Length: 231
Image (cartoon, rainbow, N blue to C red; front, side, top):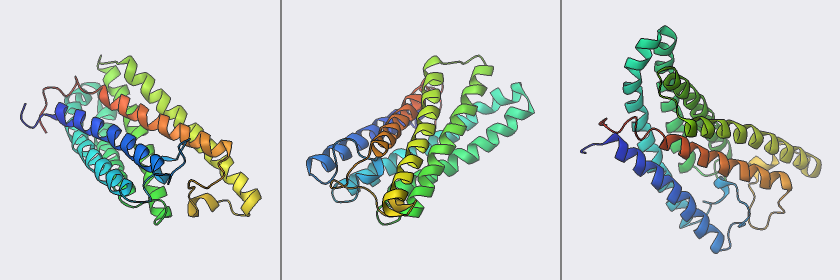
Protein backbone atom coordinates (compact mmCIF):
# COMPACT_ATOMS: atom_id res chain seq x y z
CA UNK A 1 0.00 0.00 0.00
CA UNK A 2 1.28 3.44 -0.91
CA UNK A 3 2.38 5.44 2.16
CA UNK A 4 1.54 2.45 4.35
CA UNK A 5 1.97 3.14 8.06
CA UNK A 6 2.38 -0.59 8.69
CA UNK A 7 5.28 -0.84 6.26
CA UNK A 8 6.92 2.21 7.81
CA UNK A 9 6.56 0.71 11.29
CA UNK A 10 8.08 -2.58 10.16
CA UNK A 11 10.89 -0.76 8.36
CA UNK A 12 11.66 1.37 11.43
CA UNK A 13 11.75 -1.64 13.75
CA UNK A 14 13.90 -3.78 11.46
CA UNK A 15 16.28 -0.91 10.71
CA UNK A 16 16.64 -0.11 14.40
CA UNK A 17 17.42 -3.70 15.38
CA UNK A 18 19.81 -4.25 12.46
CA UNK A 19 21.59 -0.99 13.27
CA UNK A 20 22.16 -2.01 16.88
CA UNK A 21 23.40 -5.47 15.89
CA UNK A 22 25.66 -4.11 13.13
CA UNK A 23 27.10 -1.44 15.42
CA UNK A 24 27.80 -4.08 18.05
CA UNK A 25 29.52 -6.41 15.58
CA UNK A 26 31.64 -3.69 13.99
CA UNK A 27 32.68 -2.05 17.27
CA UNK A 28 33.50 -5.28 19.11
CA UNK A 29 35.28 -7.13 16.29
CA UNK A 30 37.45 -4.06 15.73
CA UNK A 31 38.61 -4.34 19.33
CA UNK A 32 37.37 -0.88 20.26
CA UNK A 33 34.49 -2.01 22.49
CA UNK A 34 34.24 -4.75 25.11
CA UNK A 35 32.18 -7.63 23.71
CA UNK A 36 30.53 -8.34 27.08
CA UNK A 37 28.57 -6.33 27.61
CA UNK A 38 28.74 -2.77 26.31
CA UNK A 39 26.42 0.06 27.17
CA UNK A 40 24.67 0.82 23.88
CA UNK A 41 25.92 4.40 23.94
CA UNK A 42 29.58 3.39 24.32
CA UNK A 43 29.64 1.58 20.97
CA UNK A 44 29.58 4.48 18.48
CA UNK A 45 32.72 6.39 19.52
CA UNK A 46 34.70 5.68 16.34
CA UNK A 47 34.10 5.27 12.63
CA UNK A 48 32.50 3.49 10.88
CA UNK A 49 30.23 2.46 13.77
CA UNK A 50 29.45 6.06 14.69
CA UNK A 51 27.97 6.77 11.26
CA UNK A 52 26.16 3.43 11.17
CA UNK A 53 24.66 4.06 14.60
CA UNK A 54 23.59 7.68 14.13
CA UNK A 55 22.25 7.25 10.60
CA UNK A 56 20.42 3.97 11.13
CA UNK A 57 18.83 4.84 14.44
CA UNK A 58 18.16 8.42 13.36
CA UNK A 59 16.11 7.20 10.40
CA UNK A 60 14.42 4.55 12.54
CA UNK A 61 13.43 7.10 15.17
CA UNK A 62 12.17 9.52 12.54
CA UNK A 63 9.96 6.74 11.22
CA UNK A 64 8.69 6.18 14.75
CA UNK A 65 7.96 9.89 15.02
CA UNK A 66 5.68 9.63 11.98
CA UNK A 67 4.02 6.49 13.35
CA UNK A 68 3.21 8.37 16.57
CA UNK A 69 1.10 10.81 14.55
CA UNK A 70 -0.74 7.95 12.83
CA UNK A 71 -1.49 6.20 16.12
CA UNK A 72 -2.73 9.47 17.61
CA UNK A 73 -5.14 9.83 14.68
CA UNK A 74 -6.41 6.26 15.08
CA UNK A 75 -6.78 6.68 18.83
CA UNK A 76 -9.03 9.73 18.51
CA UNK A 77 -12.34 7.89 17.92
CA UNK A 78 -11.45 5.34 20.60
CA UNK A 79 -10.65 8.10 23.09
CA UNK A 80 -13.90 9.91 22.30
CA UNK A 81 -15.86 6.80 23.20
CA UNK A 82 -14.00 6.43 26.49
CA UNK A 83 -14.40 9.99 27.70
CA UNK A 84 -12.59 13.21 28.49
CA UNK A 85 -9.69 11.62 30.37
CA UNK A 86 -8.65 9.62 27.32
CA UNK A 87 -9.27 12.47 24.90
CA UNK A 88 -6.91 14.74 26.82
CA UNK A 89 -4.55 11.86 27.49
CA UNK A 90 -4.29 11.08 23.79
CA UNK A 91 -3.39 14.70 23.06
CA UNK A 92 -0.76 14.76 25.78
CA UNK A 93 0.70 11.41 24.83
CA UNK A 94 1.10 12.62 21.27
CA UNK A 95 3.14 15.57 22.53
CA UNK A 96 5.15 13.42 24.94
CA UNK A 97 5.87 10.79 22.28
CA UNK A 98 6.88 13.42 19.75
CA UNK A 99 9.28 15.01 22.23
CA UNK A 100 10.66 11.57 23.06
CA UNK A 101 11.28 10.71 19.41
CA UNK A 102 13.02 14.04 18.80
CA UNK A 103 15.15 13.48 21.89
CA UNK A 104 16.01 10.04 20.55
CA UNK A 105 17.25 11.52 17.29
CA UNK A 106 19.36 13.99 19.28
CA UNK A 107 20.68 11.15 21.46
CA UNK A 108 21.98 9.10 18.55
CA UNK A 109 23.37 12.18 16.80
CA UNK A 110 25.46 13.44 19.74
CA UNK A 111 27.54 10.70 21.31
CA UNK A 112 28.18 10.12 24.98
CA UNK A 113 31.92 10.76 24.81
CA UNK A 114 31.76 14.26 23.34
CA UNK A 115 28.36 15.42 24.64
CA UNK A 116 27.80 13.54 27.91
CA UNK A 117 25.12 15.78 29.44
CA UNK A 118 23.11 16.31 26.25
CA UNK A 119 23.32 12.62 25.39
CA UNK A 120 22.34 11.52 28.89
CA UNK A 121 19.40 13.89 29.27
CA UNK A 122 17.92 13.11 25.86
CA UNK A 123 18.39 9.35 26.30
CA UNK A 124 16.63 9.49 29.67
CA UNK A 125 13.81 11.51 28.09
CA UNK A 126 13.48 9.03 25.22
CA UNK A 127 13.24 6.00 27.50
CA UNK A 128 10.89 7.63 30.00
CA UNK A 129 8.49 9.15 27.48
CA UNK A 130 8.29 5.90 25.54
CA UNK A 131 7.30 3.91 28.61
CA UNK A 132 4.74 6.49 29.70
CA UNK A 133 3.15 6.71 26.26
CA UNK A 134 3.24 2.93 25.75
CA UNK A 135 1.51 2.39 29.09
CA UNK A 136 -1.23 4.89 28.30
CA UNK A 137 -1.69 3.45 24.81
CA UNK A 138 -1.98 -0.06 26.16
CA UNK A 139 -4.59 1.04 28.69
CA UNK A 140 -6.60 2.90 26.05
CA UNK A 141 -6.59 -0.09 23.71
CA UNK A 142 -7.46 -2.49 26.50
CA UNK A 143 -10.44 -0.34 27.48
CA UNK A 144 -11.48 -0.40 23.82
CA UNK A 145 -11.39 -4.20 23.66
CA UNK A 146 -8.03 -4.35 21.88
CA UNK A 147 -5.94 -6.03 24.56
CA UNK A 148 -2.70 -7.71 23.55
CA UNK A 149 -0.77 -10.01 25.88
CA UNK A 150 2.54 -9.58 24.09
CA UNK A 151 2.20 -5.81 24.35
CA UNK A 152 1.39 -6.07 28.05
CA UNK A 153 4.37 -8.32 28.75
CA UNK A 154 6.70 -6.13 26.68
CA UNK A 155 5.67 -2.94 28.49
CA UNK A 156 5.93 -4.64 31.88
CA UNK A 157 9.40 -5.90 30.95
CA UNK A 158 10.32 -2.43 29.73
CA UNK A 159 9.41 -0.86 33.07
CA UNK A 160 11.22 -3.61 34.98
CA UNK A 161 14.46 -3.23 33.03
CA UNK A 162 14.16 0.57 33.15
CA UNK A 163 13.98 0.56 36.95
CA UNK A 164 16.71 -2.06 37.30
CA UNK A 165 18.94 -0.15 34.89
CA UNK A 166 18.53 2.96 37.04
CA UNK A 167 19.30 1.02 40.23
CA UNK A 168 22.41 -0.65 38.83
CA UNK A 169 23.57 2.64 37.35
CA UNK A 170 23.30 4.32 40.76
CA UNK A 171 25.19 1.43 42.37
CA UNK A 172 27.90 1.72 39.72
CA UNK A 173 28.14 5.46 40.37
CA UNK A 174 28.38 4.85 44.11
CA UNK A 175 31.26 2.50 43.41
CA UNK A 176 32.87 5.23 41.34
CA UNK A 177 32.34 7.61 44.25
CA UNK A 178 34.42 5.33 46.46
CA UNK A 179 37.14 4.87 43.85
CA UNK A 180 37.27 8.26 42.13
CA UNK A 181 35.57 10.49 44.71
CA UNK A 182 33.08 11.59 42.03
CA UNK A 183 29.50 10.31 41.76
CA UNK A 184 29.20 11.36 38.10
CA UNK A 185 32.63 10.06 37.09
CA UNK A 186 31.05 7.55 34.69
CA UNK A 187 29.07 10.24 32.88
CA UNK A 188 32.20 12.22 32.08
CA UNK A 189 34.33 9.13 31.51
CA UNK A 190 32.40 6.56 29.49
CA UNK A 191 33.81 3.03 29.58
CA UNK A 192 35.95 1.65 26.79
CA UNK A 193 37.53 -1.68 25.96
CA UNK A 194 40.25 -1.14 28.58
CA UNK A 195 37.87 -0.22 31.40
CA UNK A 196 37.63 -2.63 34.29
CA UNK A 197 33.94 -3.43 34.20
CA UNK A 198 32.13 -3.83 37.48
CA UNK A 199 29.21 -6.19 37.89
CA UNK A 200 26.95 -3.15 38.23
CA UNK A 201 28.13 -1.72 34.93
CA UNK A 202 27.53 -5.04 33.17
CA UNK A 203 24.07 -5.36 34.72
CA UNK A 204 23.25 -1.79 33.70
CA UNK A 205 24.20 -2.63 30.13
CA UNK A 206 22.24 -5.89 30.17
CA UNK A 207 19.13 -4.09 31.42
CA UNK A 208 19.52 -1.37 28.80
CA UNK A 209 19.71 -3.87 25.94
CA UNK A 210 16.76 -5.82 27.34
CA UNK A 211 14.70 -2.66 27.77
CA UNK A 212 15.37 -1.46 24.22
CA UNK A 213 14.41 -4.80 22.70
CA UNK A 214 11.23 -4.82 24.79
CA UNK A 215 10.43 -1.45 23.19
CA UNK A 216 10.76 -2.95 19.72
CA UNK A 217 8.58 -5.92 20.67
CA UNK A 218 5.94 -3.55 22.03
CA UNK A 219 6.02 -1.43 18.88
CA UNK A 220 5.63 -4.50 16.68
CA UNK A 221 2.27 -5.28 18.29
CA UNK A 222 0.74 -2.21 16.60
CA UNK A 223 1.21 -3.69 13.13
CA UNK A 224 -2.34 -5.01 12.83
CA UNK A 225 -3.83 -1.91 14.43
CA UNK A 226 -2.36 0.41 11.79
CA UNK A 227 -2.38 -2.00 8.83
CA UNK A 228 -5.00 -0.03 6.87
CA UNK A 229 -3.69 3.41 7.81
CA UNK A 230 -1.67 5.74 5.66
CA UNK A 231 1.00 8.14 6.82
